[in-house]
Image 1: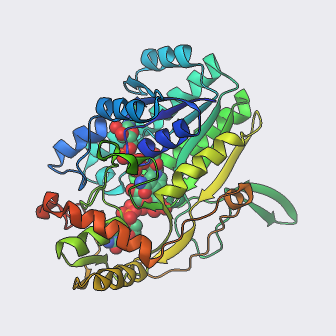
Image 2: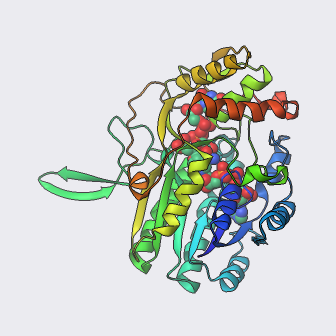
Length: 382
Ligand code: NAD
Ligand code: USQ
């Protein structure tokens, strides 16, 4: 298949581009490199040293003979996007290219507005490009489990059957997102749903949980292919942060009571889920929603698991319940469904002690790169 991976220089996008290329697809990357610029803005970095995108794709070609084309540009520049669509004529458009940090979106008004402009308008451009140039192209869009929030009922996969005053309907599951970032994903979902309904676009919205890990079979092939690994309080996500904190002797930062429960998945499952979504396109006019995670944990449980893994390498850790910078439920019911990707053939890589120790070893290898001042949270929701 001809597949565009937008956001193909990022944490999820880069290993996905490699995986799809390895599987024999004709892959092109779109990226405007804004994530690397945000590192400069935040005076932060990836724990793992990362090569430039140019070096990455050149190394991939040298090792495999496979070419991944690169289009450096912004989804918000419609002329640029038009050109890519005309050149590539994509059969699937995998859309990772958004500002994905909740804390970044909550820094101040400018960052909230940037996140909304970048994400909502970029996605609208993609919808228009599909309509205008490749109406059969399947949009595989990265959404988030955080669109649903933490309701006191089971979370279904996108839709819920409701009986109200004697009548029944299947309706979108209610959304209660927890940051301006998570809100952009809800807006995207609504725009995609509308475009499917009025223009007959085909789309799959992957409501992904928090991703952990860093390497896949493809990125392990050479240090130049290594993936990024974020640890700072703005872009680092819970489990990866805890592992890096353990590696550097920092306290493990559980926010508040620590009962916050989310769906999690290994980056090795992210790449496979994208492949499954691409191989099973939605029908014209259909918006499919898959919940993309494999296991649920509270942050308290994650801290305990990381402690055990660290102890097995003779590393002592301290878990600290620090004041929660976010406004969120700290103890709540959480039972989310995620069966559709399993039905399509996903075989989850579960969070074993072995997996934790593996990520911990990668963090230890590069621990001198961690800028300690970036670890404690400074952005607050209020
Ligand atoms: P990332 O920031 O590492 O990667 C995103 C990439 O998109 C970056 O390389 C960035 O430069 C690029 N980009 C951003 N805006 C762009 C634009 N307007 N035009 C072109 N390129 C642009 O993020 P990630 O962790 O790889 O996440 C990828 C997607 O998956 C995001 O949409 C995110 O919301 C979603 N997601 C991520 C996680 C996670 O735990 N990392 C979990 C659930 C969902
Ligand atoms: N948390 C801690 N300590 C930390 C960091 C986080 O207790 O040091 C807590 C947070 O308060 C939150 C939970 O861990 O309750 C998850 O936070 P996170 O930073 O790991 O994840 P989140 O902000 O939700 O965002 C990440 C990605 C985002 C994606 C989302 C999936 O950055 O792109 O959409 O995970 S989900 O959480 O399912 O919405």
